Length: 480
Ligand code: AMP
Ligand code: ZN
Image (cartoon, rainbow, N blue to C red; front, side):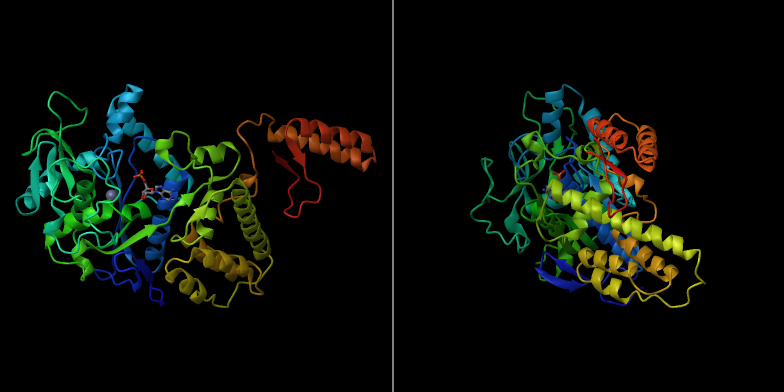
């Protein structure tokens, strides 16, 4: 285990805390996963890049990691607070497809993004519909003391647990943001843990329960899956910052009801010792909301010719608790930075062949200090870049960069410069054709036939290929 104490920001206490595992030598982490009614947008993927860095850090620091990410395929309503329709049912109706097909399609699309962003596979992907019997058992266990039944379902009474809403720092009286209040609720913040299918309606996904045929509430799912797989209390629960307001306070209330009902001065009573939240990726024109129809997908970045790991690097340049603004210029700059880092590794590898075996111990101290400071990936990036320029053996420097990349996950040793060339999907010319044209141009220039050389350059430009003489990154051409 590396030495620096790992400090993480706990949203529940709003302070940095030194990580102390519940089980010695282990780290158990639960991440709220996607609702698979649509493609993820790149903002959603920021949440999983963050969770991945957390997981990599825990492993790097020597903990045996068990990471669980769930797939929500039932129960998430169009409004987080019990109003509106089930997102899955709504999309299935719109597309006239079965919910199961919708879930399968978007789950695969999400996993494709996970792979493209080099997000490590968690120990387990828990799928909500696989846990419905356990959800019913959990609800039965807390129903008597903490819930009441209305025509529309079984509701959790938030006044039955201590410190409700502490995570959100919200006032429960106002019920702010809780539109379309359900009639009969005792407190505005009360929420459904079981939603009955209204009489005369059939849902594609419904199950029998002591409270009638229906479907589980979204908050119940995460309490049950995290508790089942990781055991209460586990170490860290993560999600996007929007979950700090409703979803996670409700999970915490259910966990308290299930475990102890005691207050949150002892964070273990919340089900997880530490609650961590990534801030949002924002975009000026507002194309970051899945419900808005048009939104930015990772595939669009790839189609425009950007390697997906440039987006990963863009995320790592910002602290996970800061808002990050997306722009194409920013993405381009991140791609160039990644290119320079990959070229740095390539150069060191060439030197390696000529040098004696390294002896100096590469100190991990700086890297450890940076990542242990609430996952300061921006600093780890700078360290990786400065290592490349140090006056040490290439072998030692490569080892140190490899350590950084265990945390960053940028595949610095697998990528090549060619992988990072901007290559939009719309481009029709092949690399072989470009190479042939450039070889002809070289000959023309050698023969001082500048008219021919310029003509070839223009021909290439007409096909979207920009010839880049004297580019500092050593590119001969780029597609635009
Ligand atoms: P959903 O599929 O809507 O449940 O969201 C999946 C994850 O993405 C959750 O952890 C959200 O909190 C997170 N999230 C949603 N929008 C953004 C955004 N713009 N930037 C970062 N994370 C987000
Ligand atoms: Zn969740």
